[in-house]
Length: 144
Ligand SMILES: CC(C)(COP(=O)(O)OP(=O)(O)OC[C@H]1O[C@@H](n2cnc3c(N)ncnc32)[C@H](O)[C@@H]1OP(=O)(O)O)[C@@H](O)C(=O)NCCC(=O)NCCS
Image: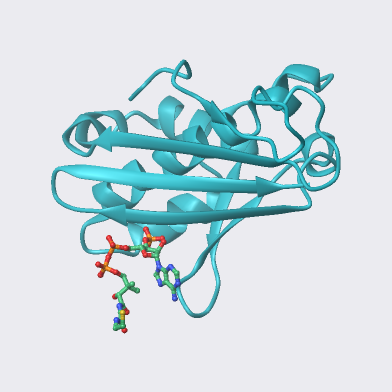
């Protein structure tokens, strides 16, 4: 989905909206993208610069099916945004797609990088990504 409106926030503190982000709070986010949409989008340098970190662009361009990797990173940013939506609402600065970075460990496991303004709300962010020729899916779990 290309909107932010279907966010899922869970709290283990008996607060279904996750309004008070105390230690142990869990935020959950999911996003799905149509890969085909990104074929055109990633030819636009302004879009690339606005959405992806330099490291992400290098990673995706090194892959055979690079469009899928770009699409799944977009999905990851949206999923993390959803999982962090309460914290982002409280953050003093606006958060853009490029602020939420995805880098891969040597094993291939994806990891999230966040700006300082958000990192204090999220001690641990876990994501899982999957993509086919048609769809790219990301799930994000936040613990603070
Ligand atoms: C790594 C692996 C899970 C990827 O699965 P896949 O079906 O080929 O591809 P998917 O589209 O579902 O997933 C790709 C994403 O997996 C993620 N991934 C890669 N290695 C990973 C790892 N070690 N741990 C977690 N996630 C990983 C990456 O984010 C990748 O996307 P990216 O390169 O754009 O970042 C798969 O190649 C593999 O090694 N499977 C082994 C499973 C196994 O041993 N099963 C037996 C017991 S269940």
